[in-house]
Image 1: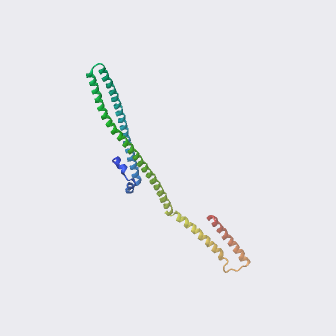
Image 2: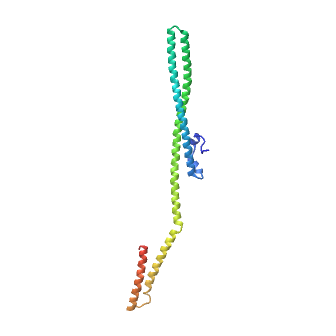
Amino acid sequence: MGIFSRLGDILNANISALLDRAEDPEKMIRLVIQEMEDTLIEVRSSAVKALADRKDLERRVAEHRRAQDDWSQKAEFALSRDREDLARGALMARQKLGEDIALLETELTGINEAIAKFDEDLSNLQKRLEEAKTRQKALEIRMNTATRRVQVRQTLYDGRIDAALGRYDSIERRIAELEGKADAYDLGRGKDLAGEFAELESSTAVEDELAALKRKLGR
């Protein structure tokens, strides 16, 4: 059984409220759209039948009017031949056709009113269907956005970024240690020639290692 059971239910339904109450709005909007499309097909099918019935009634009314004209001519012909009895019978047949025409035209009026109602219902139903499809697109956009946000959050909190930052901090600390080690050579040491050469060699080695680390960091 569908969400809606009658056309009136669809036209009077509050789609937004329906989605707000739903546990799965995406599934609900699909069901609503399917129900509307099915109802649209049914209403159109009924409208097609009503249009066919109207054509049939119009044809029968036209046939009756032609028959009336024919009986009028026959009545005139009968009188011209002094056959008043036949003329009276022809006029009675014409009168009976007039009564039938009145009944057919009453039925035709009802059919026209039904067709006008079908037209109004189809227009309103089409608008509600477009509204539902618009809500479906909005839900899909929200769903996709939420999914991407979850993926970003998962990336942020799965430890990979923290690990990368930790490695970066470790390299920074290593550079600081090397810089301190280089500076420490100047503490408590004289400036004799041998010492300066030793300091130069040590400093060169430290600077080379420091430069390699800086290149690794892109500094």
